[in-house]
Length: 92
Image 1 (cartoon, rainbow, N blue to C red):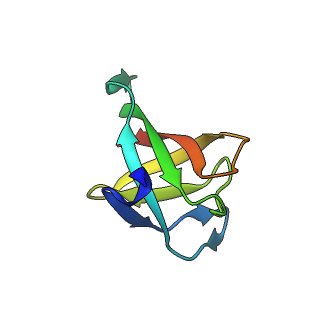
Image 2 (cartoon, rainbow, N blue to C red; image 1 turned 45 degrees about the vertical axis):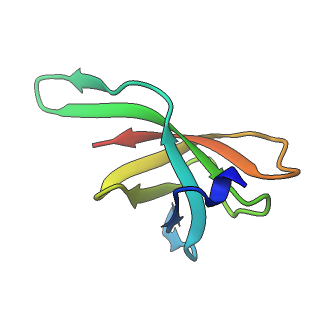
């Protein structure tokens, strides 16, 4: 299965709760964009997460991966018959 190719152990945080580590494949699906204002700057990029059908993941969950980058889940595909497909944005 594609999930097992380059998967990584992810620890999701949901509000004040930290969930047990789960295996996901994280792939970038868009080019990074830089947002700036007078006080800050932020780099964002969309990523896709592929996990087991019974993965415990919800919109709004956050996790760190790829050298400490912070991700936030913003979409989960409703059909989870064979796998969980979710999207997240990375904020650096």
